[in-house]
Amino acid sequence: MTTSPTPAAQARQCPVCRASITAATTGRPARYCGTPCRQAAHRARRRAAEAARAVDWTRQRLAADLDRIRQLTDKLAAAGTAALESAALNEDSVDGQALPGIATGWETGLADLARHAARVLHGIESAAREHGRHVADYRHAARQGGLTDPESQS
Ligand SMILES: [Zn+2]
Image (tube, rainbow, N blue to C red; front, side, top):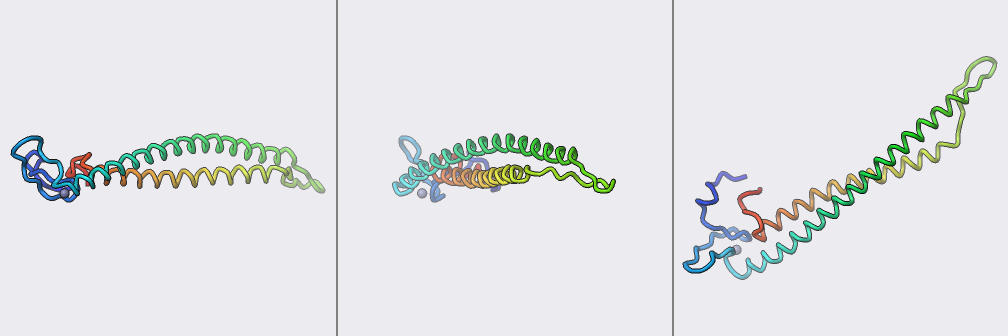
């Protein structure tokens, strides 16, 4: 964030190198200071388009992973509850002393579900971080490409 005066009061600035642009006396006002910056801006706009696609792709991945984790946590909760309840129904006793239930066979299934959920959660973590990076790439390229006002974003 800068404390410069309102955009209307500023001299035009090249969005690539930030040099001030001398106002053209005829025709459309120049957007860039010269050919190298105009070409750099063209490349920056291509990078911005790529970053926008990456943002979109990451959001789709995130939506799919969130859907999977919802289903998995439902399954995990149901399997965990069933395992604990089956244990409670199988209480045994030795010489009148109650033993904890020994129902078994559910451990591997529950562990597999938990491992699967951990992988999906890891995917959500990386997608969230990647989203932030792609948005930053987009903003940077969009500024250099003159797609946004260079003073409007920091
Ligand atoms: Zn320039």
